[in-house]
Length: 405
Image (cartoon, rainbow, N blue to C red; front, side, top):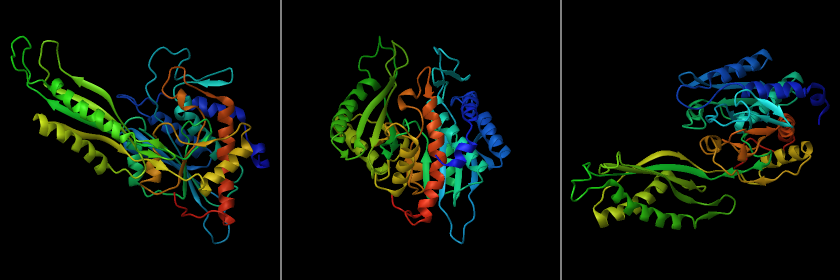
């Protein structure tokens, strides 16, 4: 660890930042917003000399932007790096041993909603920026902090980012990976399929026009399509998938169902496009319509492409080198098990992107969610050292601004 970091690092302050951030109820549900958490981050950064601002992605739902500029050196421009994380959390629910929005440190674990997903990652990035600032910004380039709202539901924060002019040479998202380096994930698309019938009293209708019965025919076609899709595989990310994950129909036990709706969860491989994916489902359902005369409606609920960066990419190698220096435990390079907002950087803005952060994905969305304190501290050290290391490699010609994904 560099001498300047050892002189400026305060473990008590680092833990305090995480505990305070967990203390804000930033649940992503009606009647709640991330505003208080965002305002606190904004004040913390500005109070420590890091220029920050708030930009609303939706009413009372502001993203946090900040920039830390390194030392000027000659005429060359150093690299720009985005540190990103979301500040919303899923609803806490009931049944917690520890208060979900009053963080608890016990037996080396910090408990609270968002401890792993992903306030530990956000706090570690904030602490890294504070350390770099206190040390006099010992790097040649720019560090951008971007903490967004609404990751858990409709990605309004990232949609605002797409309209913003901010871009960078590299992006790091601190979703929980146990500090392993994850180089991609499958995308996800969700569709609603609806059939319609004619409502009537079940005691009197002799030839029911039943929306649920109609849906049964379409479900068989979708199951057959699922078998075809799962045979498609990416060497790194695994198989494409189509799953039927929700079904809803009918209004009462004695009423013929007027509507039936199912939700499809489609896991995407690199290169799969929305029109192609939707078209394949339409084709399968249309065959049923031709055979039965049953009609259907298909609506796209969301579409997030796959994200991938090569294991040999210089950005991956740089983070691997820093991680090996900081972490006492072995670091793996692997695939992120879930889907996150990496495609907004990697796909939409063509920024080489890695997902790496403290906490385990298995802790996301569970009761008594926690992050290991030691792992959180390692994240602070890793993120802090990554910035000058990246800039130094860039300066020495080991990296360029336009390395391909």
